[in-house]
Image 1 (cartoon, rainbow, N blue to C red):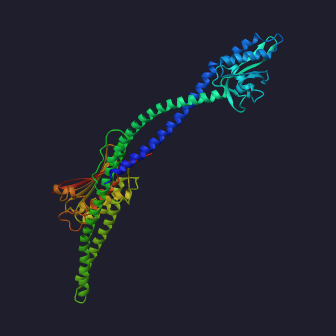
Image 2: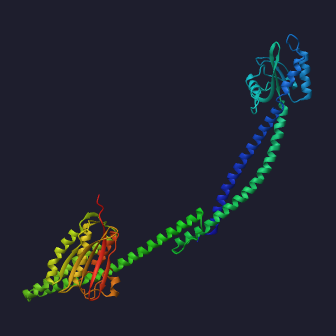
Length: 491
């Protein structure tokens, strides 16, 4: 019996894999949440301060000298005013080429001499863009959010106001705070989701693996030779399909085992019957041969001929028994397959009847063939059907006496079949014996020369043609055997 711990191990393994996947999914979700929150914060800050540079330009236009030059003192006053209003910004004055002309920043540690105008033009031309980052003059190679506006007067374009929306210190502190807040919020949310998902998932896994337990137990019991074990199957579900497949497999195995047992019993019976049937002719041959040897000087030619005839007859019977055993064995083990072909059943019946007329005339038995005019060709194995007719006629001749008759009749039936009947007016078969006539070694009460295999061979051949043979008999009045063959398909 499979112990429960194996079932528990399966549950633990599946649960561990599930939890690892869930934790990995949670980590990815946290990372995406924090990064998305930071990007969203930056985008909101840029959108809210989008017009900051433009409003600064409006203030500059009134202070620009008549010749279109921005005075240093005026520029410094305006920039310092902006810094007082919003101390976290950095303000830069750029010429039309992007070169930095003037600036107001904390600690005055500007390292770039010019700013790339590409992001500035994108900012000015497309207000629907998401986050747009430009050069950070204080940190070459890094990029920051900004606001920008062109300075345009009557004399032409003088340059750009470039406003970095957050100083380096502010950005670091802000990102740390935002990240910490979002991370904390995400962790609380995800932990709650993780707990609920884990609870539901583990419960689902438990329910699934719990259903495996009776399947495993059933398989193990079947392995312990409890062949009647079956798994209770409910409607629907993949696991129930496994149980259904197992039950079908178990039915097939049990059926095969029963068939093997039947074959083994048949083998034992065959050995027993063959031993018995071979013993009689072998003993007869041996006995008369010994008699001939021992009395060879004192035996007459008449007695010698008699003994030799008995030996010859016994050898013929022994040969026939062996041949029929071999033939039936090949039929039952499917070593012989019908080679179906179109042929005239009427011509075959005429040929077989001509062979038996001489034998029947010697016994005083009438032999007739009754063949309908519209009998078509049939599709079957010619040699096998010839063997069937010979066995049936042999059987009829054996149980007929002088004055009886044998009739072979052929008639076309509906549904594309041709029926063949072999009828005799012999002694017939008692009703209680009818179910046994096709069994191996069954012989009539007065039949001591038959091998008891002829009708068993007939039955197997007809079955190989996907048909069946039927027998009708009245004791003292005769017997009729009939079978059907399919019509040949004519192109």
